[in-house]
Each structure stands twice: as C-alpha cells, then as structure tokens.
Amino acid sequence: MDLTLNPPHGVEPVRLGMTPDEALAAVAPWGTPRLVPAQGRPPKRIFTAFREIRFTVLLEGSGESVTAVELWWPGEGRTSSVRVLLDGDDVVTTPAEDLFRKAEERGWTVDRTDPEYPFIPGVSLGFTRQTSQQVPRTPQGLPLYVTSVLVGGEHYYDAQAR
Image 1 (cartoon, one colour):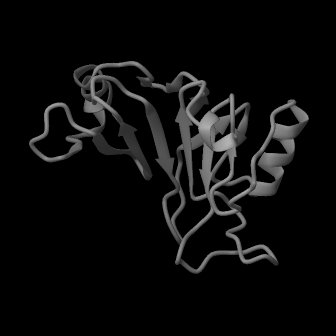
Image 2: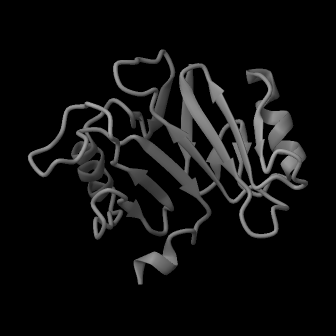
C-alpha cells in the first residue's frame, strides 16, 4: 500500500479543506484516532496511523478545516510495508539529500535555512530531519533520511520563505 503525497492538496484519503468530521470519516477505517484536545470540538489535531506510518491531521486556526497533513517514519529499527511517495520516491527510505536534489531538478526551491526543518515554499512540503534515536547520520550530524513530511496548502510556508 502507498500513501501518495499530493502537494498542495493533501495525502489521500485526507484532503486539505476537509471538515473535521470528513477527516475523521476518512481515517476511520484505520482505527479509532486520538483527538487533541481530547474533548475539543473542533479538534486541533487528529492522530492516527496507517500500519506503521503515523499520520497527523492538522486543523490550525479556527479548526474548521484541515490545513496540513504530516506523516512520520516508523522509527528506529522499524520497517514498513507502506511507502510514502512523492513523484515515485519513497520519502522515508530515500536519502534526504537525494530527495532535495530531485526537488531542485523539478524546479522547486528547497529552503535549508534551518537544516533540521527544510521546506519547499509554494509546493508547501516541509520535512523534519531531527531525532534522538540512533540512526545513520550525515557528516553534519543530520539523520540521513527525513523523519517526517508535512503537506500544507499552497502558501503554508510562504511567510517563512521571506
């Protein structure tokens, strides 16, 4: 099974702009999600997992609609049968620098101002390269692979890019 990143629209089955109830219904087949706040209506975050891939739905601002989706790698020493794909590349198993090089070859700008949290403005993809776990690292000390990827709306990272 694949989870395909579709920036700036979401990660199926969750699309940006969905209501909280639509997002909850979309991930319901995976099990009971955890809401934050627990009794909050609308929730600000919906936490679930598709097999080994942790899946976070963000409902920022008013909480009336999905603003971003973030997927997290399985963790140290764990593997997954689920691929997280961006244009055919598995984001959690392709070395980060290869992902970023391919993004630049597509004409995208990768902002590495904060090397632990690079992002692609306009396309609205954000990455985490931080973990305390014992993982392969680059000579600069960064994890070789990204530990999460966030798909936001078209202008999600625009303020940070200025």
